[in-house]
Length: 461
Image 1: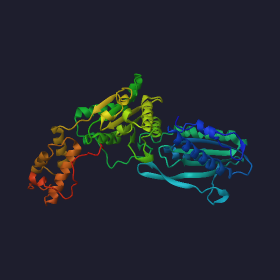
Image 2: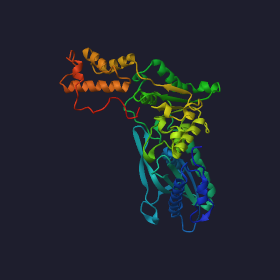
Image 3: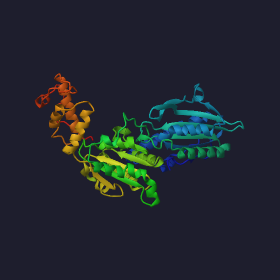
Image 4: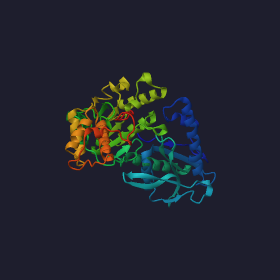
């Protein structure tokens, strides 16, 4: 289940809040004890200050109140607001705090993407008062909880009403939760680990990948082709999940394969990149959230880039990394059903990955090497790259010689661009027919180039 369970307090006069013991019984995240206690204290303080105290001001002093709340994934924050509006469509709505009265803070707004090219203004935090013609009154508090930890944030919705109408309030919340959980408006979109839309600068096709056609056929069959034929697998009662691990030296095209899958796939695509600091999805809670989103929007392909950063060998792990690896293995094992999910992961160093992860078929069914290029592949790339720019003839032949030692497409591309830059710096037009050029000219040092070896040598794909 995606949302946190509904929480219902007992009717009390004034603030009816969960106790600290209640919060301790609600799983939050996998953290060292000291960090968990700090997070718990902040969560309790925030909920106590914002949840009950603020909404109490919407009712006459001394009114016995009941508080009911639910949490949803952050990517459903706008869905939760729209569902709230539909649920109370026949009620009169008043935004609290706009005039600063009663100590209620004014609403805060944010922009939320509704498509790769559109955004909507929504509430970041707001207190609303709903009144029905028959006299019922319900207050709502909606917020994005714990914004400083993007991988853990929840969209929190709280309803508060007089205890006399608690059954109606509880029913309204149940209806809202069911509608939000059933919403799959993001299905089929290309998303990042937090549910934001991926913006590709242009479409990528398999023709963009210069590699052995047999290798690409295997990758397509186990990713795009597998998801396209899910109904056949279900009909034969075969597993409908798959794991593919791509490995090879930097620059061989693993990330490019991810871009092609993102562009060509007709199903949900989630790209998980190693981040830095608190926004990294490579942590126990972030990994769990990614898989929850994938199950919610399946069929889904999850593309984990640089898996070795999330799942190093246990002998090289810290205690925190061990928690992260355990969570990743649990998710891949499908302790929660992973039907219709393909996981594709990449690594520059296969030996750095924990063997229990890479060597177990139920986690990664296919371990595929993306090898260094052959001369035939290098020639095909050069012809495509140069002909697209109107360059051929003698120029092609000399660049061909200049790239003979290159072993990845990234190295070929970098060396080719370097050659073109040197030609231009020396007053030549590479696209001009019959341009005089010789290899020694290309080998002359250029003031614009950085020292050091060419190619991607920073550990990135």
